[in-house]
Figure (cartoon, rainbow over the protein chains, first blue to last red):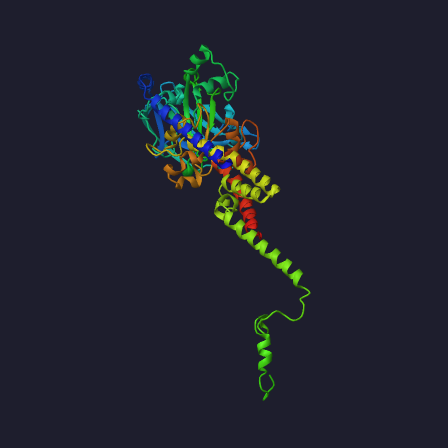
Length: 280
Length: 233
């Protein structure tokens, strides 16, 4: 009798689960979900922005890894055990000339440094903006670089916001072709501008705004209209991907996303950036 | 018979028919002082033999102890062993095996839940992005919930494993929160990374955790059943 009861429980649980799957599949093809999907897709196309992919090649200033070419009077940010790990440097004049975002300054250089012990904090990546000429290696950079150096070309494309960026629950949408612009090709994706390629379901523009206000994005928050308006000002400054060729690994195939407010970037203010780390 | 002596024909005829080869069928001439005791013993043994034959003819499926393979089946093996023990009056064995069957039920709930929600993504792109969204649509990941590659990593040596294999529900663990996921990979929000054992346990999919319980439980049932089958009835 005991065995019969157990077998019955297994059959019932399986039947209930299958019924839920079939019901959910049916719900997703309702008229409302199809209309919502079309509306979201139109909004994604409308919000498309230029993006610059950092691809191998060139002998420009812009590069990934290696040692930073800082001006003589500029030192890299320091952590508890020494200088932070150098990630990348970008020449902003070249970026604007290549068709980069209009909110980037038209001159100067920006440098990105990584603090692996600061995951979960906004300063896991720190940004240094300089208008001075790079005069070679800064005196503080005496440690061996953790990442291989690779010069980068700036390849323009168009980028659309993801469902996650817009805060849309995919469960409410009908089945739809996933990408309408800028698809991932399986290779490491390092880019400037555009929208992030999220590894987890997180509305990062909202996270940035909450962090900037001193709130924990991992907690539960009521969002006000003011917060929702402010989220629209955040832009992706740089996305760095785990890249075996550069010996870069941020968790399990993880990524680093550095965001800046559009208004701050236009004024050359990069001291209030928010960096988010994601992994799988 | 002595060499050269003639056979004694009269003695042979006297011994014939006494119940032994020497006496033939004739009854023994000396009283058998052990006869009563012997007859009582023989009658008792015949009675026990009859009882055993009767019992063996009545033994059914549920009264037999399960074989090795059946003992290893979660819940079923332990339950059958408990029933066989109960038939034999082995109260301790019956209670212990029933408890094993009950503990097998807990991880079984995880496995059933996983199967009920859908086992594998068969169609469409197997990129992590597409798989994560599909799992969200199927209800395997809630809105905002992190998915963690619990057995085969997405990067590292996992890069050599096809996406269609590693980006599947069997390999993805739904994380309770971002802090737990973060601490699996390293220090997160000032809290240290989990130790190696805790990293594996927190990151392992539910079916893997169930296997950790079913393995030892099934082995214990198999050993008990083997010992029971060896016992003389």
